[in-house]
Length: 257
Length: 268
Ligand SMILES: Nc1ncnc2c1ncn2[C@@H]1O[C@H](COP(=O)(O)OP(=O)(O)OP(=O)(O)O)[C@@H](O)[C@H]1O
Ligand SMILES: [Mg+2]
Image 1: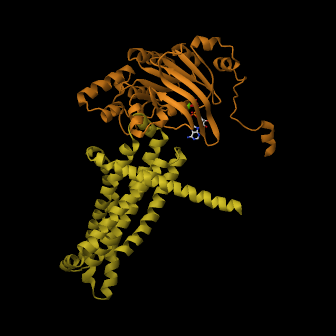
Image 2: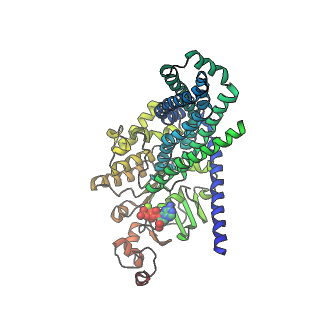
Image 3: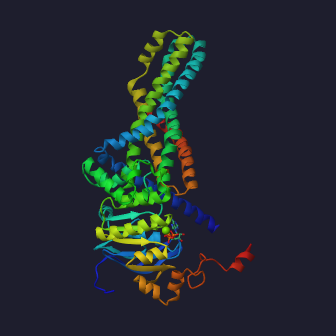
């Protein structure tokens, strides 16, 4: 009985101390952003490896998701004779939900796992210790540029996903199923609101960008410096990011409606 | 050895444990300036740990580590980083940055800490690489180097900023006899030419006795002996002679602390 209480106490203490360390490290990392602006090369390099390298998977997925939306939307709308609204359905689904959420999930799998593995291996091979001994702060030199690059890349990737998706929906709806091209675009233009829809979608993708990149970077930085440690940290990045993105999406949607 | 000599590092009453394992149980170490000091001891006694304590990467539970007049464990981050710029460390594994070429690795500390123009950085890097015999390997990536070459490239990086003190963690392991000789020569010449203080952690008794001015032998959390190579060689302490002559039997146990073998086998 007593053991059981001790166990709970131990678990919650270690949980909160880990959380505390993570929050402190997060603020230490973001505090480096100002200095980073004087070294844009570092950020650009990371935007390339985090963002540009994720573009292919994002664009291909966005295209397929858009086409599926076109098919499914058309099938449902045509029963009500409302297939002219297909453009609105596709665009709203993408801009408000699927764009930010699916991009974040794909980004976690593509860029997040790579970040964790990279940083974890740097730790395991003493490269991080090496930096410290060269009087270079790894938080400033390794974590901060990656986090900032993730925050910048994620909304751009989500925007690309949505844009390509809208085009995929157009190909299926208009070119294949014969929805009027004029109504596809004009209804979309009329019904998609900048603040309500586009901006809220962007906010979501920025939040997901922060959360997913931070999870990836932190898991790598705090992993056990061995091969199993790195591999389980990589798994945790993908699993935790997915859960947190979906949970946060619900929360953000509820707040925004 | 006189008490008044100039010590760049003064360690007093250092205690350090990892979890319940005591690694250092009150050690005192003095590293004389401009000399080569060797730290020896059986595997797992905490030699790497001692270097990390000196570099401020680990904090001791008790005791002081003075580098010049700064107590390393008590420094704030900014001062600690300033102190580290005066130290170079050669890691046991090399610890080169794997995403850049050998050239960029050596240039890294120069680019991070100085505003030197590219031409000058190039010259400095080539000088350091030439010193370790790897000028021709500048365009290779760290993954294309052998273990010994990686160690030498890391040495070039450690001396890039012309530090006052270099910490070598096992510089000789994994070197063939020729490059071992070269390395011994190199460490000695770096030490005398640049007036650098060197701390060498090593198992290689012969090379170490040959190169060092002063030797500390650490075992089981204590300094079990120190002195010049001659003093160590002629010591009649059973601890020291066991280590120097590499005898399996003696006061220094081969086994990690464990319950008695018989009890352990019967416990299953
Ligand atoms: N990260 C760590 N966590 C827990 N214990 C550790 C850690 N690193 C080292 N140790 C323990 O500390 C002790 C000293 O390790 P250290 O690496 O300093 O030994 P060493 O003297 O350098 O050995 P070697 O000559 O084999 O390199 C070992 O007994 C090891 O079990
Ligand atoms: Mg060691």
